[in-house]
Length: 247
Ligand SMILES: Nc1ncnc2c1ncn2[C@@H]1O[C@H](COP(=O)(O)OP(=O)(O)OP(=O)(O)O)[C@@H](O)[C@H]1O
Image 1 (cartoon, helix red, strand yellow):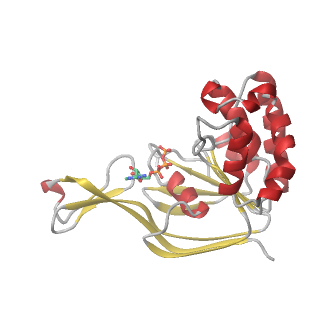
Image 2: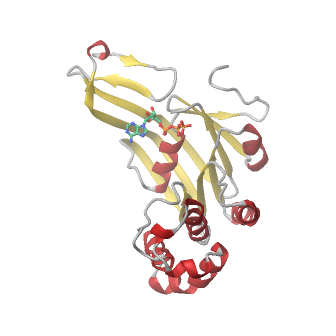
Image 3: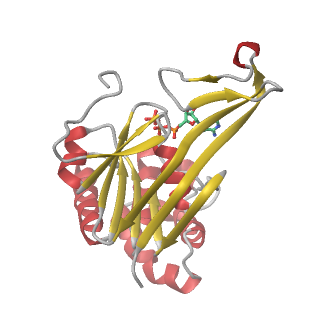
């Protein structure tokens, strides 16, 4: 199987039900940040977060996405992860997707660390047998020891992050989606987390990483794109990173 992502004319719009603005009637408004805000003749407001986005990513691509606040980076990654459906356009992905977005969302505070590994594993599409096979390795990596048998509500936020990171980075995926480079845990955990991230980034056929850091994108990515009010454009290698303010 060839790993790939093909997107054609993708649009994502969010209808805003609790806002109507007379001055917006039939107008499209481009705010300094964020996607385009528009209103139909009835004054119903919507935000266009992605505006006719097309691209093709293939095996070996290390894709960096830059863009101002509200440019559509997280929306794009959520569409790729299957979390959002495009309002228009087509998206074809081939390969197993792992997303390191919102990694601590979806845990249950009443459940133990082990039970949460199970829950998260199922959500990530693993079978119970596959989860059991990975259980001890995940627990060991988190270094949570006896806490693995305690309910998650007894954990500090750093401990929850350790567990979330240990689970999310323990899947073999073909496509890895990341919203910023993850920094988790205290100094000693951070060091091994960084090493693990580097390992998966190197071995995953397609990486899509959104970041505000020019240095990080230059270091990690082979191609760069910029989102500007929901529109995607490729940044050529010779082009310098241009911030929204400067563009
Ligand atoms: N659930 C939602 N409901 C309504 N509007 C949304 C929603 N999620 C995102 N938006 C809007 O879509 C646009 C793109 O947001 P998105 O979070 O994708 O931007 P971003 O590039 O990731 O921004 P940042 O760098 O600030 O994290 C923004 O205008 C935002 O207001």
